[in-house]
Image (tube, rainbow, N blue to C red; front, side, top):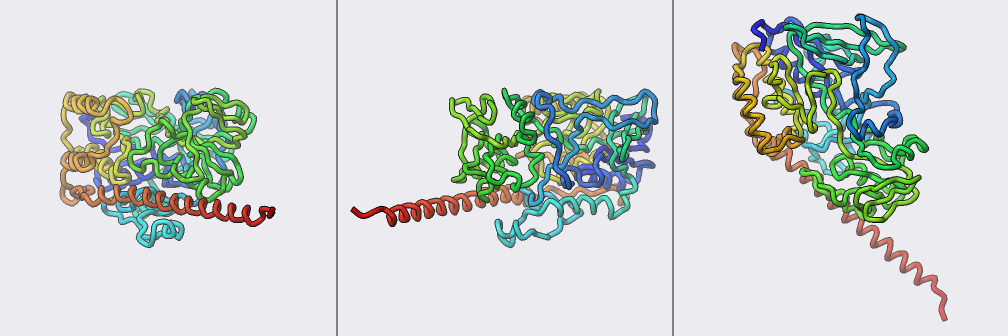
Amino acid sequence: MSSLPIKRVAVIGAGPAGAITIDALAQEKAFDVIRVFERREGPGGCWIGDSTRPPPISDLCALADRTADPPVPIPEKLPAQTSKPDQPRFTESSVYPYLETNVDALAMEFSQEPFPDQKSDRSIAVHGQDTPFRHWELVRQYIESLVTRNGYQDFISYNTTVEKVEKVGAEWKVTVRKEGQKTDYWWVEWFDAVVVASGHYWVPYIPAIEGLAEMEKLRPGSVIHSKHFRGRDLYKDKRVVVVGASVSAADIAFDLAHTKTAKGPVHTITIGRNANGYFGDEAFHHPRIQQHPSIKRVEGRTVHLIDGGSIPDVDHIIFGTGYSWTMPFLPQVEIRNSRVPELYQHVIWQKDATLLFVGAVAAGLTFKIFEWQAVLAARILAGRVTLPSVREMRDWEAERIKRRGDGPKFSLVFPDFEDYFEDIRTLVGEPRNGVGRKLPKFQREWMRSFMEGHERRKRMWRRLNRLARKEELEAESRAKEHTSSIRPRL
């Protein structure tokens, strides 16, 4: 940490992690400048919806080798005005009109901001009057209210992308690009510290498959990532293959099958893949879903499988295969094995504690974990936290690698929610003289509601699958009766 007081703080992102970070910083009352850069048009992050369809995928090779989000060339002299970059920046939304949360609202709310109790008719119809799930627009409004209620919108520059963050002497040089209607404007601002709250569910990952690029080239829009799914209507009477065994693949495959939108059956590539640890594989047992092993190659519109089978006349392949974590704006910080190494408690960059991260975790307790991390970051920058030595921080990481591995599971917080939250609360301490955001003691009902919400979704899938099987049996019975009634008598 710099020996000089931190007075100017930059925050990258105004999604749920960024929004709570703004509040945590503001409540410390220790900073002269809090500047937030958000590349979308408003607060909300990945909970912002799009009014237009996303562009067709153009570079499947880059998505497969996780190089699809390189830095954009920066003008030699700044400020500057330039034409818009032509490379994809992956700012599109990942929501569709009827998307609902898949986590109990109690696990999503910040400790001082109750989540609205408004429930959609669709959620009530599926889960009952006590449904704990909320429509995506309510989530976006919730994040927006956190930003606007205390005038924090004045801190934020929207439609502004951080293109480079670099340490120059004792300061952080932040190069940004603001989108205009016809051209973009570039400039530089200087800070004492930077908080990265930009999320890591932006750049889709699609595995390399022979023939996939040719299919997409000949039929633009035939290959998409679940991020680009905009609802079932585009797939009416189409033959669809869904790749992936986790949350988004389950939701999309089940939606297309149960509503009888896609041409039955909906084909899923799930055999041999690990089901999501929270949601299991219940969704894929719908009678109108046919499960298959991995794809070997695509030839024309035929999907060939590794077991020698094939799926002909495919109209669309939808990949629910996760995301690649990229930070093209931070060249001095590496990303390794889908995680950011050298982060203590997933927040503090060990090489320089004036660079902090909020949201660099997986399977956390949704928004709540952002709050704990944001308060820790704010308290550190306000000079109110005594950090362990660099050696202790490195030992913490080394021990965690021994237990979790040096990959995605490193940043997986489940099932140690209580331990992690309490460790952060101990580091943070209590507000002094009423200044700073107070973190309450971890409540086990948060984890209970989190886990029970997953069980509720699994029960929903089982119930609807039974109904669908019953309908199919009844239809088969009626068909047999009809055949018998028209059989000619001898």
